[in-house]
Image 1 (cartoon, helix red, strand yellow):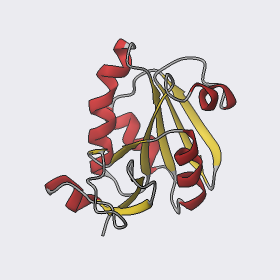
Image 2 (spheres, rainbow, N blue to C red):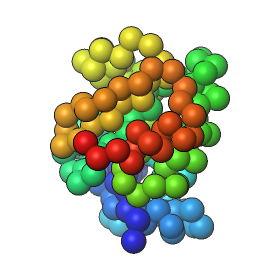
Image 3 (cartoon, rainbow, N blue to C red):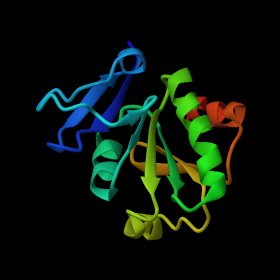
Image 4 (cartoon, one colour):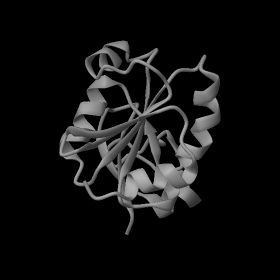
Length: 144
């Protein structure tokens, strides 16, 4: 079973989500039964939930740092979402640099889109700019 982690926007519970089920039906929170907001197997998180998922993740976490005003970010979004459904070797998160500017500053995100991979809570690699599906999958599937 392919699983990912997400956080419920309503009750703030951490949820394990079956990726196959999330593609065919809307996933619901195990605590409050609200629909979990996901794009493919991608969760959009704030700073607090970003750190929570990094602490719990048992596989690498691939993060897309983006902003709503950024043209390349908008083009990259669907590729990032597609990649999340094609591999179970990583957890995929999106962080808005507009909504979480402090996190972006802490991690020294200087340009967007930026794709950052974390393993065991530590950054292991970073790529600037929009990546192709193949490059993103290679990044996600690399054993760090």
